[in-house]
Amino acid sequence: MSESAASNNSAEVDPREALLQIVNTPMLAQCLYVAAKLGIADLLKDGPRSSDELAAATQVHARSLYRILRALSGFGIFEEDEGRRFSLNSMAEPLRSDVPLSARGWTIMRGEDFTWQPWGQILHGVKTGESAFFHVYGKDGWEYLAEHPEAAAIFDDAMRSISAQKFKAVAEAYDFSGVDSIVDVGGGNGGLMAAILTSNPHMTGVVADLPHVAEGARKNVDAAGLSNRCSCVAIDMFEGVPEGADAYIMANLIQNCDDDHAVRTLTNCRRAMKQGGRVLVVECLIPGPNEPHLSKLADIEIFVMTDGGMERTKQEYQALYEAAELRLTKVIPTNSPWSIVEGVAAS
Image (tube, rainbow, N blue to C red; front, side, top):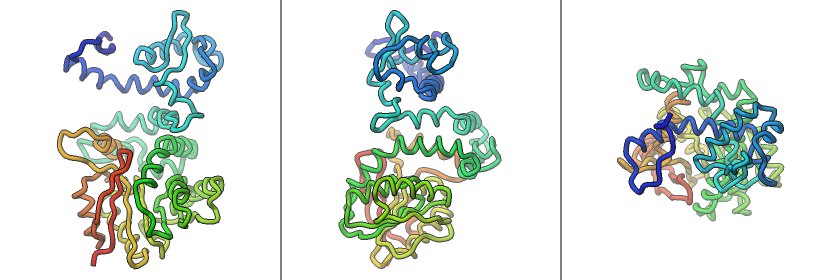
């Protein structure tokens, strides 16, 4: 396994060694999954503990846990001393469950079977164009989550763990001064709506999603003290959306749709909004050739997990808007990898 070891400290990294580091990243991710699932970072928040103590606290095999933590420490995640005692460092801190912008939920989801196994079938997807998730489970990811509450809870926690920064960035980047009412289509747990309404006290909102999702959003809206300004309703976005709002926002929703379903959803929003209203799509836009960006890897995740979903370029969003009789007016960058694609009814 010498080829999977960390690169040396030389200024120039051998291309082959750099490639092997990328190839071996899934092994590191699975080690992170173990640490996150067991709550190791939470156990270390009050100071260093030995691997034996951590194993006893988590009821796992001591030697095996030590090997996992030793590997992570070798890549700068946790720190090990000479007595096999481990402590938190800056890379391990985000694995705590009680810190702002915790990465624990996302790390756990990435290692669960319902995300890990479909990636093992990605070649099947490339050969056939079929969703690897569907190939493994015989249904798409949304159907699977609706039927598996435990997996859905892990998914929701993962979304919360990576969404807070994005929601704040969207609320700060867009000028909502001309918007009195807004509908979040596919609004999930209500996090984006909470961020928008908190930053814009003049506004009211509706979180619209599938029945079991809307119920969870209602609890979060109540907990945020926004129930007097926000309602949560159950919808099928392909059939229709709540009518009469000034704006309709969709975050990481259109990416999960093929072009036909995307156009149908956008059309429903155009028909439902007030005259002079606007549609706001929050997504990672794919930049030009050779430019590194989260969207290019996120696009493969969507390819694996959904039937026909994809990340898109600005030009591809413009085509979707035109098909829905919308005019793309501008793209607003945020302090995150996501952008806001604004559209109005075509004249």
